[in-house]
Length: 381
Ligand SMILES: O=C(O)C[C@H]1C=CC(=O)O1
Ligand SMILES: [Mn+2]
Image (cartoon, rainbow, N blue to C red; front, side):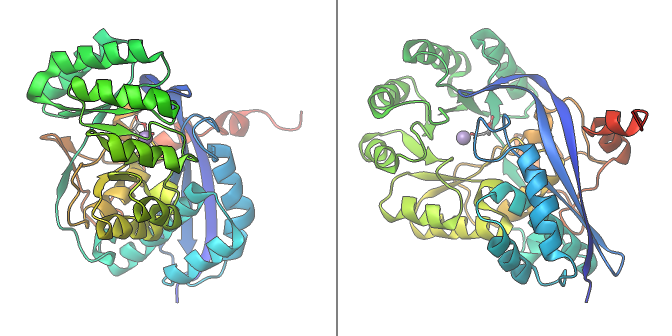
């Protein structure tokens, strides 16, 4: 029995290729918590926990993810059978409430370790991949319409993306609609245009906004209203011809059930981090499927490790009506994987090989680790 004998976390700060403007914050760097789990048979697994904009997007930050793992999850899991992932999930959930991204980070490493020991991809442990590649959206969020149009043109030309998600909700409705309209007019029928409001609108604004977006050819609006206001999300879904996607409201299968039960949304943005891991993510997917909702593989703008883990799970889903947005590594200025995930022909390709199918570049990890300065600084002062 391969017992867990070491759990190590490393916090990295990696600059983004440009400012990423969301309704609640502008990102210029992404903070990533890497997890390494070692088992006493010498095998290892890696995981990642990544959030957005410190604590401005949700209830977890890189620092809180690291703390939850180092101080609570790691001590509780020490000595546990690495092959017993369901048992480990039980221990983690009894030890730590909330904190779904921290829980996910460690679970990824457990699946990676198990896959590597068995010599199979994690997708195989979830029944096997039904597709080798998935459509992948890109987020246009430079904060400037002309820059976004140029970016969209370049992506279509390179055959990298023809699905674009526009981040809105920071500016007044009129400016946002003008911005989205300009992008829709520029790309025409060469791309699918969606928007993500990240909870910024009240119901009155959302009603007007969604109606205007529909007029200009937008296909879908993601989380237009606050996650807590499920009644408002449902009101929009009931009356809008645009598809409404649930994102921040989905913090695992219990929320998924609440949203599905009264059809408060048309589509689930399934995120392994927000769901609390691959196992709970697979349950969110099952609930969405059983309710006849559309599915979309979402991201917390994760680096390569968590993106690879999400790809392992989403590759096993029968129908991903809305594709994925697993482009996180492309938003970062530098690659931390030894071999990057492949993006081509408007798709992201499932990495091959055992476990999650990717390995870290140790030099890059060393370079971007937050405590690098501390490690190099003279001690004793
Ligand atoms: O969906 C979100 O709210 C978070 C994230 C995903 C893509 C992106 O640009 O931001
Ligand atoms: Mn979203």
